[in-house]
Image (tube, rainbow, N blue to C red; front, side, top):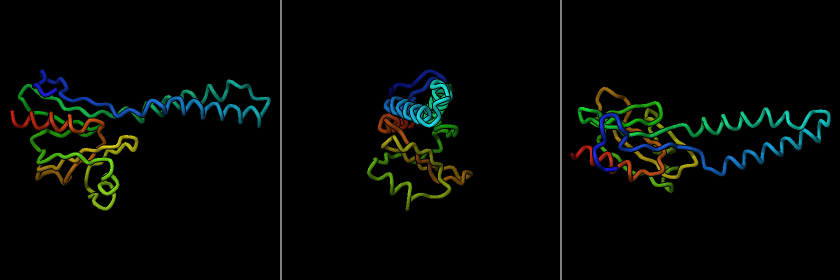
Amino acid sequence: MTRPAPSGAPRFDERLSVPWWWWPAGFAVIALIEVSVRLGHPGVPAWIPVLVMVPLLATALLRLGRVRITLTERRDGEQLLRVGPARLPARFIADASVVPAKDKQVALGPELDPSAYVLHRPWIGSMVRVTLNDPADPTPYWIFSARRPEALLRCLRTGRSG
């Protein structure tokens, strides 16, 4: 993961999907709703709540977990960090650090700058804070959830030094 990638290929790629156990928990909630409907409305067929709720559950969980973090290297050697819909050329990164799970509440609470770019997923413990040095951008830093923040920082550092 520390070698330069071919043009456009990700050096780092992570999907911020929901935990696997949310799926069985969601189906358990659907089962409870189905039982409640059957007890409250015995004339309603049992399959109707399931038919409605399963696609809603699948859509919700897939949408919650579709955010990606990627670091790609272009042909000219420049790296591009993508966090969800936002993009940042690596030349504008002044510093990057890991925010451990125990410090997340402070980083997202009293220390949070209102003009910072935030992409938070509460089910992911650690975060990355990237300080910017772009005078044209009013955003002072990005702070976003990442499961493997150390690997992302390693990729960022190797790209800037090499």
